[in-house]
Image (tube, rainbow, N blue to C red; front, top):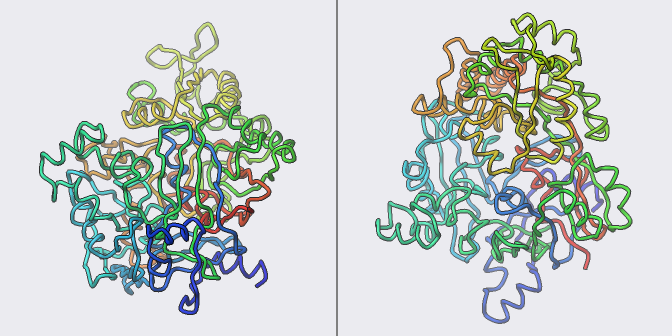
Length: 630
């Protein structure tokens, strides 16, 4: 088959009949079968495995070497191997679509209220135990509806505050339903699956046979306390979640998974290793059980210079995470020395300044509430200089809005408040009564304090970018005070409502319907407002009665319950327009290439895909079918 046809087949996720295949496996598994440590491959696979059309049928073996930044860097490795009932894929024309994962079939009712899924028959956890709807029921009854584990259910799984319902049909088939139509449900599943409290988030599935020992519906208080003590946490419910030592695959080698690899040597450590899952449920077009690669090793690094040195020394087989656009020239100059090639995707994000609308500083909070102040902050930035000096001219000046190729792209929104106009910025600031200055030329707030903003950053491009923007802001009388912090502190600042502004790659700008929460303020500009909305007022901070974010919330409620796609899309586009027009997030540059380092013996890496949190980062490249020439 020609390579182009193979690519198209891969992108569309076509399933082929497996009845005529004689299945093959990695030599490392064959040895385990010979020793009696594993059953034969055809007993480990489902009756009809999912067929992933590899770009090129590969070779088994090898260790994929990459780098990681410490225990908190869990999402990078996770995106190498996440699984969903449905996954985003991209065809040769660049169009995104949904393909089946570990299910054989799914159906949607005409009114978009009911969704029926059928698991692959013979699907197994990584320890060989069958995966059935008993695991689905455990997820629903004992996790999703268990307030001790999930005090609140995210709006994406409970539109209008009404949780989905579950009906078990047989061992492989189950149905979920909603009180109102929910046309975006499959898009959301492919991005966020069924969400917390997992890390790799397999849709609807938790291994009951293992996790019930940590669940208060099955274990006694004494047993739960003993488990918490064993894992070194204060309370039993701390065992759960993306950081939970019992339920996060990244930390627990004993946790059964359905992913292509599982943790072997967990973090923290100089080298963290993953090993192939002998029960992985997919094969290539020739009947070879995937993945091709046996192990993945993540080597610890602590700064960008150390990581770039690893690249030049040939220590990285393939990696996109932490390969920074500002170092593009350096990477290109060292291709021959490191025996690699620089490859490019497109990032569906805009690097942005994110003000905190609920900041504790009352004077700054009052200013952030003024549209003229937000516009002044935006148009005072010389984006072209940022692009040239920080992003090697590879980006474009733009707002935080849907990217080119998105079904929600609007060229007018892309340029909203993105022009450099310091004269107008000065006029707007004067018009707000900020016309008095101190001896250093900085404006004074109405309370007499200097107009200063502390901006937190945790990315390598932050300091140089903030140096440029601080100069821009000084020209209009605003003092910008950059503060470099680590990821743990960054998250704590946001969660505790303890930041004034953050420098952030504002993403999820490809298929907004798959995760609109970031535009609704979640984890960004209005985190406390979003918590108030998503908990129906139980926690968080209530926005003022006339605040435009209420329209954003109302538009999502309308989209989430719309009777058809056209009606839902109209409401979603209204949400996007309000978000962009209000300028709550100050986009600087975006549509930056997502750069990867790919060793010349590393195969089946596709070019030109969309890198986004929605498409699950590197995951859209289908890592299971990547291989290394032996």
